[in-house]
Image (cartoon, rainbow over all chains, first blue to last red):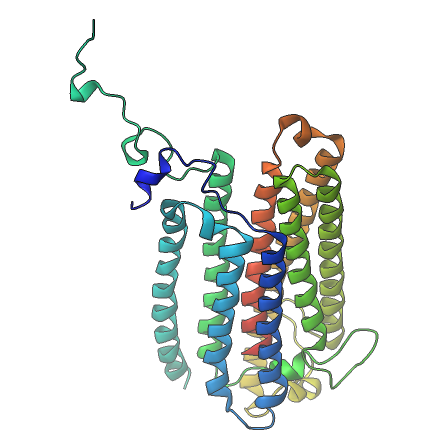
Length: 114
Length: 239
């Protein structure tokens, strides 16, 4: 871990936290992302500006952005030790494997049903 | 007179050689994180099975057609408005929670109480909205393994044969009530835990203890509930 040397005498000191200003900033980011999702869903897709199959990946990317802001700032993970952050995030990556396997599998199910 | 300490007997102080916790968090907080990780796996498996069933269906009920009412106000033609309100309520209560945690860092008891009570109110508002949403879908005929009659069902689809529509509507109903129900159960337990913590704050338990770490731990749980909703919202209402 790269943070080891500084951690010896910086236990409380480098514990940077959220100020009220930062909290509201993150709130407005979350709100703005949600508004963008609504604009896409209620106006851009129905009026045909972007087709549905383009909008879906956009929703997922925007959702992942929201997830990042909630976990990093509201749940404070960004300010925790790198070791803890990795212990939480690395196992989550296995989920991607399950998504790939089952979406691939479901394309075979649709053929089986005919 | 000094005693020479051989290297093997030296007390180790670095985090990864057993000197102290490499994670540098309190035990309960670390365990909350690991519980949330396991809960994330549960929700992922539910959402992934939803995804694979939906991918394997020729047709699927349109979200903008199923969810287009604001209970008590508009019956048709307002897609996503009500769920938008629910999303806003939950994000808002996440903000009041993190403000409670921030007040706890400053040991400001009164502020912690105010923000915690607002968080609890937000939780109840969300649960109330979900109850309205459920009863609206139920009145249309959706429930666990129950779907509207063929005439009503047609309104929720743009294409497809009736047999396909009925099969996917069944899957939709089961998955929707199971997944939002499981999430709603988490919101409910979160509200109960928040109430208990608020009472403890009122009694001065954490003031005596000198730290509001418990508020931080339930805050993690509450944010996680918000986090899951972000995904449920995307996959049930947008995609």
